[in-house]
Image (cartoon, one colour):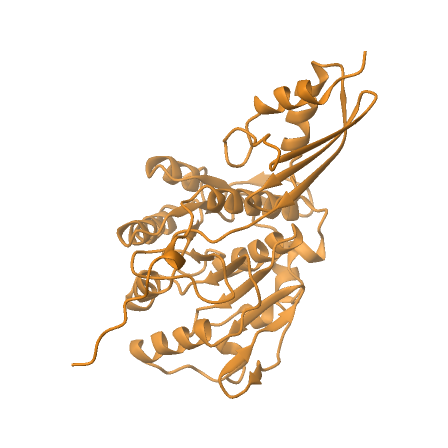
Amino acid sequence: MSVNSAAVLQALAGITDPYTHKKLDVSHEGCEVSIVGNEVDIRLVLAYHTRDAQGSFFTRIQQALSTLGANLRNLNFDPKVISHEVQQGLRPIPGVRNIIAVASGKGGVGKSTTSVNLALALQQQGARVGLLDADIYGPSVPTMLGLNERPRNIDNKMMAPVENHGLQANSIGFLIGEDAPAIWRGPMVTQALTQLLTQTAWDNLDYLIIDMPPGTGDIALTMAQKVPLTGAVVVTTPQDLALIDARRGLAMFQKVDVPVLGVVENMSVHVCSQCGHAEAIFGQHGGRDMAEKYNVPWLGALPLAMSIRHQTDAGNPTVVADPDSTEAKLYLDIASKVAANVAILPVDTSGSRPKVVPRPL
């Protein structure tokens, strides 16, 4: 007996989205079903991009259809990303729907590597993505993306983002010499970052990833208060010293009303490239325990792998260098979770509010 679309939709209505943890939208606008015999093709409209790296969507839907005697032949996603709420008094910047800060309480935990691969993973899943290097004193994005060109000037008013691997990017590293130090005080750094953000002609981005400066000092705090952030991702290692500072970074975002989209644990385990022995040299489960303690999402753990370092140093990060690797699939899964956690946030309504223009005295 052939299955019918009403039965398929009823089965789908009971499935929980593995990333948003909400029931699937099976309305006419949210789901399209095509049936040939017992073979079913499904198109889902999602508020985020995903390649379903772990196959969670496909598995859940196939299990539901199997109770009807049907088989899932094709599953396609139709992503529609919108702008979400930012801090009170701020508005999203032109050309960017959502800004996501990637931060850590201290340097040396792989924050920039995570930022670049997260941005590339979102882009690989079909999103339009930009990357802003906000580490004025130690810009690393140019090296990680294999770029050494200056942004093109647009009418002496704006900078065109530099592009590689499908990403739009900007960094102070594009504007100063490779070995030139940025000997600037806090206010100058903040002004430079503001210019990089607002004077770059970002082109229709779903997400702009900001690789934040390390720490919770004046620069990071100013960025968290003045940049219209949709949310933040906190990167740490399992080591107690890193966790202490990561908790400070997490608390900083919570104090300025920026949603924490989740915690990533970097360097969670080292796998010997010669014998395959795995060892948690920085401790175990520190990031996961921190996420649980502060009631924020746990995004996943990444290994301390030689390949990640080699690929990133060569300007060809893991997600594009070896897209079928275990490490790349971990980044893709983290990207899906980040995008889904953005999708369930309140929608931006600032465009419907009148701008407050001060009257001259």
